[in-house]
Length: 294
Ligand code: RIB
Image (cartoon, rainbow, N blue to C red; front, side, top):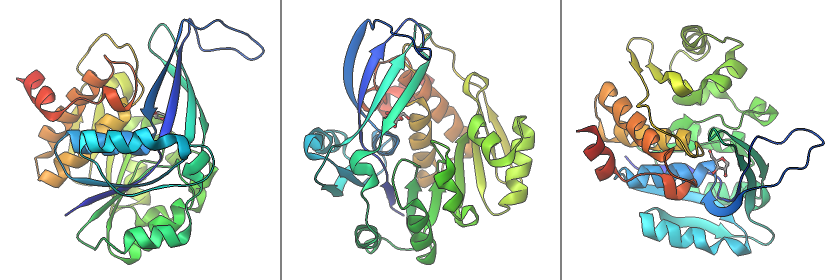
């Protein structure tokens, strides 16, 4: 069973601010840092750092070569990352004094997938493999349809949640990994138990991994429901906390670990991630996570 993740690669321009800027306001920033990010590559790096082999499919612009170096450093297979003309995907991220963020996303190269390129990537994978997806690339619905035809296990993190998701046949998804805001957007429910119930009603064959911010995370597959609280820490930057959780969760599933163990490991990895600035570089390695769990 191999993991293929087709997803975004963004250059994150991160500004520390007193508060998230208000409409019409001009605010001085304390610092600017540039990090590698993008939900896609963050999650691939998390899978790889958790110790599971992962192939990343993605598109970078001419200034995106550092992503290839990062893949080599962290052990992400980059055979299916191509360079296209034009700018890389990038974000402008504000981090306020409480470590909360707001993200402005420019899709760039991430929005330049073609059906031919998707077919070319998927041709190398089979029904034994897993396809992980988020919503920062174009042709998401096509990826889901083609992967489903091949019998692949489709894992969807429907983030960021927007109208583009309406074209995706969610009934083809085997595992949803989502937060409570996305849960509300998909089901109209606010209460975590109701979100899970409704998701199960809508997609009875899917497993649901619902993250709840400071309230932890809860897994439900129709029979087993497992709750995991957070490990409290002093956060400096919450960017990529969800991606770290997703990558570790998937790695645990691939390894066949029991769900409670997977949730504990994923929550611990996320708690370490938020104590560090940046996205890709803030994802901890498995050894560190296991050591911290002792
Ligand atoms: O999930 C965090 C990521 O969202 C950031 O790295 C940023 O690039 C945005 O895609």
